[in-house]
Length: 547
View (cartoon, rainbow, N blue to C red):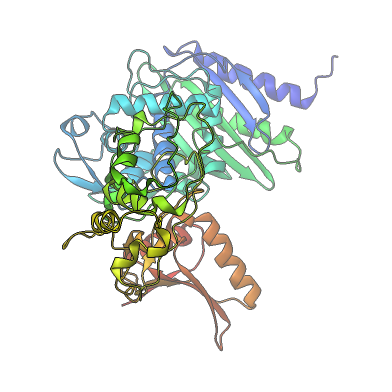
């Protein structure tokens, strides 16, 4: 008698159980099982065949929603409008009405737990503006995750031409939900939840209750797809993720999934080196938060054109006794031209100018157009020294100091040049001398970027005043700890994990009679409630405190 190993018999029986009902089903059958810790396949059958995913599509809809929340693009309490298109989706549905607004958190619960089609469409339209644009983003994300046999046409998974996926790709996506968003993954194990306008029950309750260690993920069914399921389960140190497409019924699908997982748990080792999936390219983008302030004049001014290196006239040599005619210098200088016309081509080294042209320079400065902010202008091609402010006690008439004028010049010409250089009454463009003392600075926040080569006057920077704790009189406390180190470790880990919310919060550990109590302060009420909800979902005690 030929001895067949027990493991081989188990896989043979499983294959028969899979194939026999599949021959009676209109939908092709496919299955794929992996070790979630490493991503290595354990079992595969038609794993790359492009099939109808049905409501497994909503896993990507939820992945996109979680991504948007973590990027700071939306919040869980953001109000999403419901379009007539979303309200008209066929069941399963939450019962949304066109024109109403509902928080994103409720849409996520309805899509993940009840598999509501109207909620999934509302999520897609709220994030991308239209379901078509959202489907394109879903497909782009699928490519970034390594899902090569997937193309999305909608957010809910109802049968549509060109909308397909594979058992391999859905399993990869299930693993991604577990590793990329552990703070939200627990939603897939809930049997029911409050979805704002209704209490919703899980479509996966039977499998979650029947299979030991199961904690998700998503069911799906259409006539074209059959009965689909992507599931994950953990036993001890082992975790598996598997997908079944094309089941003949809910019971058959759940039975095949249980057999696949049982066989998988018997094959994988208890301890392996965990290989976490790499961050998808679309997620590796730095999100920069900018203060919401009114733009300054410099920020809204059009950016000047860049300097062009083209021909320019050689510099005019000024004769030593030449103060006699300031007009001569003005005639020799090029006329005012657009910034884009400035040029620097192979010009001779400029002749060092003596103090005799000081008055002419003062006139040129006064009539020149005001420069753009250095932080917005093109790079400086030739560095120039910072102007040295004149003593404030010196009278205005001292712009042209007598000793700086050529002694050979006529007194009338000197007086005329000085009169032209001094601004008339009401002019403020040349108030470099005898200007009032600077006003004391208030305790404000200066929002400006000083780049390399920026010659802007620091006192001219945009200054935005705001209250120190405007609407931020709330905080959260996180239970008690026996040591201060443990409390501080929790605060640091939480600040890194939820930086989008806790970035501006103040961390504090209070030493009380009962122990060390970590807390975050300087939060808005909405952020305090949101971060507490996240802590509670991670089984961490949290309480909102404030006004």
